[in-house]
Length: 163
Image 1 (cartoon, rainbow, N blue to C red):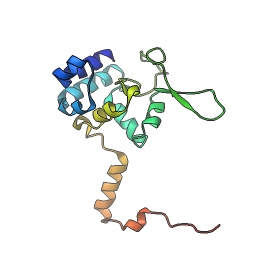
Image 2: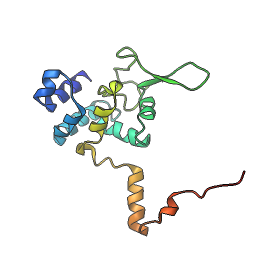
Image 3: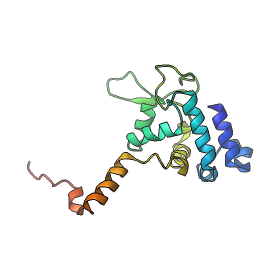
Image 4: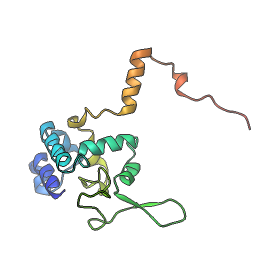
């Protein structure tokens, strides 16, 4: 994870190297080949359990909802309360840094997402991972191609005025 962070800083350019972190707006300047290489190494050495493409797939399954995604990858933990509540894990002690059966899929790389989602959003939306098309978008595109455009009224449920 630290090596990935170091590489992203180097790949983002001189300004990122001076400040020692990457702005989300700099991700667009990182080459597709470099991001894919980092992703492939994560997948290769984790038996396809870690990597940005794995995270993108899980993020899309969570409808790009970062809270749901953070819970799924184990970056948030359930609190022992009467109502269902979650809190961010404490860095670094509450994260899993080794690969085992209990380690959640997509847990690494961490990519500083606990400080905000803009950097991770920029990485997961990078052209390097465009082939990871959202399943819902693919279904919509397919249905539009097969059946032609649907009227707008078909997108909204009919109101129920019964009381």
